[in-house]
Structures are given as C-alpha cells and as structure tokens.
Picture 1: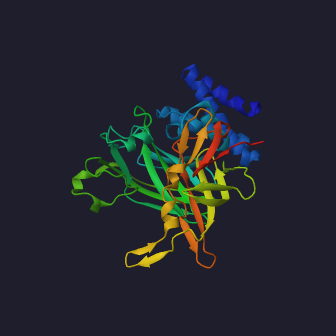
Picture 2: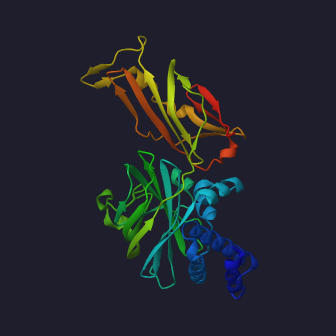
Picture 3: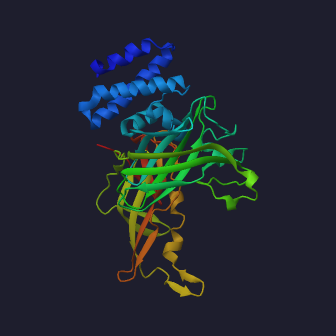
Length: 381
C-alpha cells in the first residue's frame, strides 16, 4: 500500500489545502484504492491515478471528498463503532454521468441479506443552472417532523435491476452540508428473499422540488396529478443521466445462535423459531405455529376471514427488538416481510416479520433480542 500511495502524498503537497484537508483526502484515496484492490489487484497503479484525478477535480469544484463512513453518517450514525461497521462492510461504487455541468454519481452500497442502501450524490460546477430550495432536509430525522421542508423528486427514473427475488424501494434526498455544491440521495431496497441484487442500470431525468405545504408526502418521481397547481412544482436541475454499475456487496447479516427447537411465547401461545437473522441494520424472523383445540375456529363471512391466531399477533412488531449493552431498546421499522401464511392441511402457520433500524447497531454492543414475551441473549463465541 505505501508504495502506491506515495504519488497521492506528492500531489497533495502541491495543492493549497490545510493539513486537515490533505489528511481527509489522503484517507479517502486510501479507502478507494483498497476497494479496487479487493476486486482487481493487478490494476492498482492505474486506478490510483484515476482516483487522484477525481480527488483533484472534486476539490476544485468545492465538493469535499468523504469516506464511506462520512457519507453514511447522516443516515446511520457517526460513532467510532458505527463508522467501523460501515468501513468494513460498505462497498465503494464508481459510476457517474454528467449533463449541463451536473454530475450524478453512485457512491456506495451497504446491505445485509434482505436490505440494501445505495447512496448517490448530485454535484455541480459553477456553470450549472441550479434552482434548489434552501430547506432541503439535512438528515432523515427531518422527514418525521412537520417543519417547513422541501421535497425533491425526479421527473422520471427507469431502473433495471438484476435480482433473483422481488423487492420494494424507497428514496430519500438530504443535504447534509448546505454550504457545498452537492446533495445526496439514498435508495433503500427491501428484498422478499435473501439474495442481494447485483447489476443496476438507471436512467434519470430532470430534478424538481415542491414544498411541504403543497403536498406533504415524498414522492420518488414526479406525478403532476398529485398537485393542485402546476406552480406547486419547481424545476431544480434540468438534465438526463444514465448509470450502469455492479452493486454486489458483502452482507453484514449475522445468524443468532439459538438452541434447537427454540421457541417464544406471546399472548398465551408458543411459537417455534425457524429462522432468526440480525445485522447492524435490521432484524428478520420466521416462526411457525400449529393450531390447538383452545384456538377459536376460523370464520369466514361477508366481511372476510376472521382468524384469532393472526389477529392476536398483529402487534408483535412492538415486541421484537434489540437491547444494547447501554440498555437502549432498538425496534425495527415494523415493515412485515412476507406476512403470514396458513396451511389448511396441517392446521399450521408460517409467519415472517422484521424491518430495518434507524441507525447502525454494532454487533458487539448488542446484548439481547426480545421476541414476544421471550428474551434471548446475543453472544458470538
């Protein structure tokens, strides 16, 4: 590593930057070069030069170079332990396209077996025609408030994603540093199965914005019929961008070691756990139940099907959480992954539940996981 990084140090010495700025650029360059080396070690010298040129260009445009942990910090936390997880499992991406002085770049992907977060940046030089509002959310927490914020939306996006399972997607724009020439957006994917996606092909058209008062919901792309007046929507950046990249990543999921035939209780019933997976980003569980003579019969009438078993576990998400060493309880977002299935022949059920956390929980800080009325210690011997 030292042999190939000498050229970074020599070049940085010739740039008019403070010692702290040079150190940040140097650390970012090391991380980028290391990401390349994992896949293509034979091309390291050439790639080092490419990364250095990119660093110099971005610095000239007033955009700070960030490590993966710095990019993800507004979304997942910036403690030393959280940053260490991101640096270990995050994968740098290198896909970008420029139009009208505006560059859209896929920067990084981080994920586990059932969720992935791809982070993009939109940066521009002084020639670009930009009309962005001043109140873009600076962090995800801004979206949960009723403060005066502006939402960003693309006019149209067309995605082709290689995956062996179905998925859902959310999108979130933020502006962590309003003083620079850059904003970020992150796509959050949730998979129905446990096979992460690989290649991504994306076509993006112009960016627009609207205020909270005009429509108090974030849209991933522009639906003009959602607004009362065309004047409610404003053109922020005009352009057309196309990105193609490999989004493969190393899953940070961990299997929780449990005894055979592990069970938990909830609302007077005992359920058997068939799969329990956690990661610093999410938790997922599959469990089964077989009806007994104590269960009320399933009734179907003009109002639908009434099943006391399914009804009684509808709120189990509130009782599915991680407890940390500090005593903090961390719930998932409560999004059901697959819901429930009833098998009439065996009078049994298969339930799936889980979701993502609002911040990274480092594995060595996880003390236990609670499911229903049962708590299991978490240890990795």
